[in-house]
Length: 124
Image 1 (tube, rainbow, N blue to C red):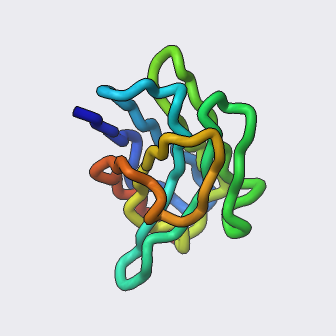
Image 2: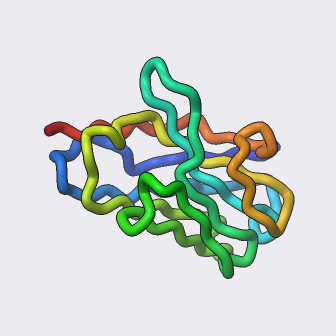
């Protein structure tokens, strides 16, 4: 049974930083591209960024480029989302997702496995 479990969310002031983690189990983690998505109240789920299965390629949404960094440690079955210079508009539930593929996709429907999400709240 595949499980993805996010952690690291919380409340932070504008300009602050948070580091989210997503631990996977029940899958060969290095076979999966991992994506981070977020969903704010009343809005659709959106792509934040992704990292290819071996970690060689990353892709980011324009809204977070230069502020967020995705990395992974396949030996620990974990993917990370380092978020710096946070803004109130980054407030959302953040989800990690996995797709059996070497390529990064921005379409959430292409990801088979999802975590339960972790809340990030940025106060102004």
